[in-house]
Image (cartoon, rainbow, N blue to C red; front, side, top):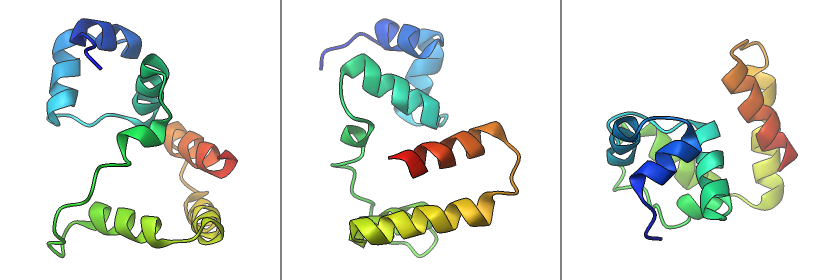
Length: 107
């Protein structure tokens, strides 16, 4: 998209060096930051994940296995999974977890 790192960092409210570290995978990009990146690039948040295929399953990569499972589900099954996650994690008090779960339920 030919966007400058400085511009993207400003959109996220972080400095350029932190953005570079996030871009390289040295530090994670938060859910809120993915949403801000989507807004800045005028893309849906899913755009960033459509072409990301998990690497060959190593058996230890839970995230890749969960993504693979989620992608294999029907829309109704995905809704059930999200509702189940919400019920399982409702006791977690961290705001980022609660906000993410609410956002998932509203999609």
